[in-house]
Length: 433
Image (cartoon, rainbow, N blue to C red):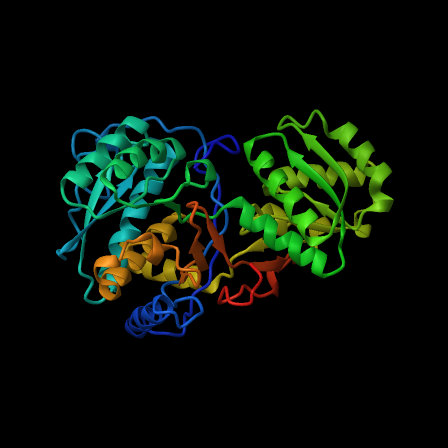
């Protein structure tokens, strides 16, 4: 994950899975649907079930292994192998996570390990064995972890979580001809053979801007945070507006200290009569500051449809702000994640971190491929099948360049929570995404 907004792993995701199925029935349907998809039957595979963007913070500092209590750790990063729930199947799967990293990174790593083991436990007859390795949240640790996992016979690597760790681990994986499914949100580390299962900001922008244009909101005022995340979403925004036939009326940037807000408000006020959509791709606290500044600066917000990204999902700053009533943002639907959380709580007696679903989906996908695809299970043709797969976080597919596409819903902000105004697609066929 890149260093988008200050702090460590900052944000969260939402989701969509069919909660009505019992666990056993759901898993059996997953395998059958995946086999159908990869055989060319069309549509996404009913493999798992929910999500929205994760934002990475700075590279975490390693912490002593004694700080980690949910599973026994080795004395150095990279030394951890799958103990509880690791499986005994014939196909070894490397899992690289920041288990001993400090702060939120270590918490995320442990929660993702739990989710990976839960996926293995819930997948009946999985012929895989998890080889869990701790990278400590560092690039050297990831290189050691990848080397150890491959030396122990791993046929595919899942992880790491952070972009700098992915860069190191992919060099080892590529030299051995082994694919990797990582959890970073930085598309700069994606490449052929190194696939991202994360929630990419680009997907949010594509979905919400395309939907707005389909609803005749074609003239955009866009306000971008002056950071790495803002740069990513601005580039995608410009592309999708041009592709869909929209028009950019005004683009402004603001700093995190908000010192640039006064001038930005003046520019928005002057351009307000020419725009019908206001795009603010930031987290809830940043959006709140901007909305307040615009309102007190005399901008009539009712003349715009306000748009956001998945950073708005499950953010109380958004739903509590009555000036955002009716605003739209893109995110996965939530049923699958709710079901996942219930099962996770029952198993581990605590809540998962939001990105834990990524680890669950990765293990479930690998288990299904092993069960249905024989010796071609991790080939590029299988992993980049255009029909894609469906996980806890909705329909997704890997592109040949290692990035991904996801099917997202468009949600509307209401005081009682987000409501779906345009459902997430359940297939890439004919969906236009």
